[in-house]
View 1 (tube, one colour):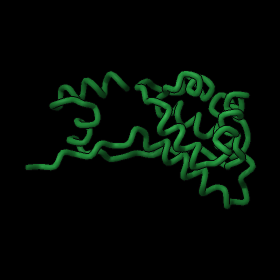
View 2 (view 1 turned 120 degrees about the vertical axis):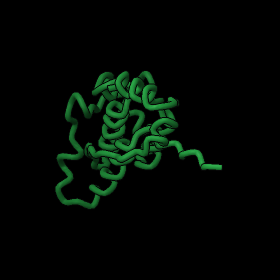
View 3 (view 1 turned 60 degrees about the horizontal axis):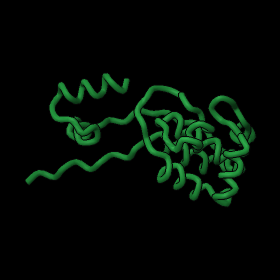
View 4 (view 1 turned 90 degrees about the vertical axis):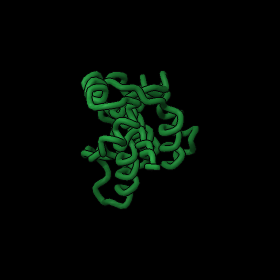
Length: 144
């Protein structure tokens, strides 16, 4: 009996942002990774308060975004960090913007990182909940 593919994480970018932020803490040129940079990085009162509520701890901040912010499919930065925090829903970009904003508000240097992932077709089908090339292509076209 073949093994079913493991489900992929909600957002690889989210993890990359967290790891990049933690790695930058040891860098000497971190000032630019601590600043507010609207619309992507915002230090609203709600974001500053949430970072403080989480003890300005980068692990707790990452776990909050990963566990408490639901994923939704849409393109680009739509809600921004404030809207994503308020609604508790966002795509990968909005979640990454919230994560970077919270980390920077906590005094942890953080930046955005982009990359590509190679995903086997069977894993993609499982992740999207589709069967066959037509269903998977239709799902990808819908979210693109």
